[in-house]
Image (cartoon, rainbow, N blue to C red; front, side):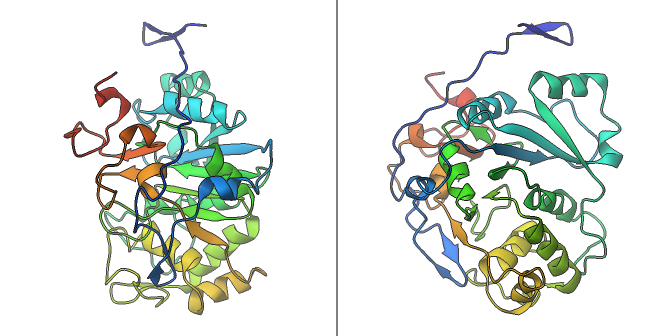
Length: 320
């Protein structure tokens, strides 16, 4: 049926996402675990261990006063959800923010089958590494809520500036087998918090809160004195989610072990997957002759750049 939005009739046509074969080693040196580089996990092989017909969700979040443009790539997300056994679409927001949603914004959510998940905080209560002022922590740590959303075989979190260009079902199936998945970032950070996938577990959520209570942040030693390796030192977002996630899920021993142990977990079965396919963020570190039609999830650049050197959002691709 046609949907009238602000006096304009919009036909909800479904985007078609590709299922082309996954390129091997699109990013030859992009995956890390602990303090070193490791081979990227083969997502499709891992997906074979997941359920045939899993119950999945794709989650996103928004912090601050709601905006009309807060779902720029929602049609691609809907198409990805449809392929993933009709996954739920979830938007995590603070109650104090979502109460300001306009009728138009509520209608937008309804028209695109987005379920609002109201939460009470965007940074864990009494966290040690809290910073005043313009800190990226609020937009990052609200995502911790996703860790404990049990009832799904797997949840994949994606930033709202991410566009789905191919099928992400293998990521969800792989995560459902018990893997915690992420990718590195496009400016040298070992983890980009704009995407992660897991089988949700309330214990993991509680472990993250315990880690936040216990582990302070320092520019010298990162979170809980877990160190910056495999990076040579501070990396972008290190004082927020990117440093926190890597320390807790990909490091061993110390404050991370203590937090996991406190909830009865010995470790997290964490792996990283090829960023140039599953969370494309500029051509940085991608192999030179990467076929852009094989990208499944496009994160950055969000503006048009040179298509000779960089894979583009669908709107900027020449055949569109």
